[in-house]
Image 1 (cartoon, one colour):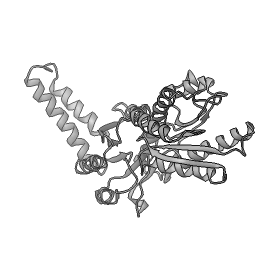
Image 2 (image 1 turned 135 degrees about the vertical axis):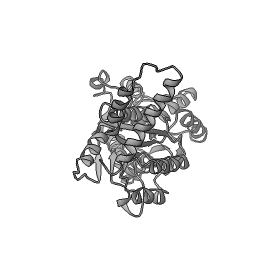
Image 3 (image 1 turned 120 degrees about the vertical axis):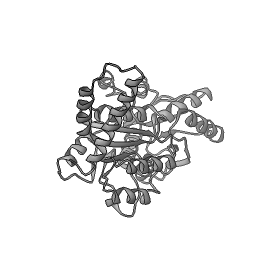
Image 4 (image 1 turned 45 degrees about the horizontal axis):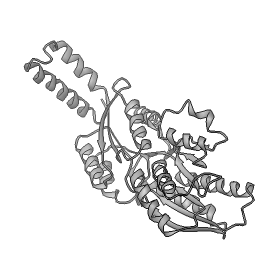
Length: 342
């Protein structure tokens, strides 16, 4: 039995007691004592995982959640306790403390923001519970507070967008023109916002004619992305490029731009660079409205299951696992449309 095996037995006992209680009400009257015993034995061997997700603010986030739920199933040997933090760090901290009190085998969470986790992660370490970061990173003084991280290289994603713009301007013979850029950022302090901003700026800082007119947060949502883009369009007349840090904000930005009477695309008024590469966004890449979409792969559940499996077998794991990702443009997107699952 694992270090938290007693919790697994406790979970099973709770499930059985619920079945017995319900039997008394006549709903599950066909459940026999032998079946209940078998049910207890079955659940006693499950690996218990507490998973706190940021929220459900986007198609990407929903797909990320589903990938974990599909990987950590009872059939695969897991008992998953899911928590939706609804975009609030205090909700996540409460969830993590709840997982600790329940003595889960593993804690998995995607942090809303990078800072403010030292205390609760110290509590998890004292309880002997490994912590796995999914998608986003934390900023802690002691990196041993978490076991490993699984996700995307956000800085490299930002560089990919910058390199694409660099090459596009060169091919279009516009590398000497003044290029006015708007940065539509995600939730401030989050890993995608920090990483994609710094990665893109690493390329942008090479060119004195790339001008960052404004940087504002759209919180990774369609509604906020549209609202912020409307404000920007009222303030700035001459905009060449919008770098939008996720597809949902891009959808909102497109609405705002087109409602203002301007057009998007390589032949339009404003060039759009986006991130995530969800199916609906790739359709807009195919249509030419989004110039480039840098993939951020949400299907991380299988990677998570593999890492937990390694830990269960006592194997050493790496400190970080980066998922595979691509860059989509009109030239290559059609080959991936039929196989896209999100």
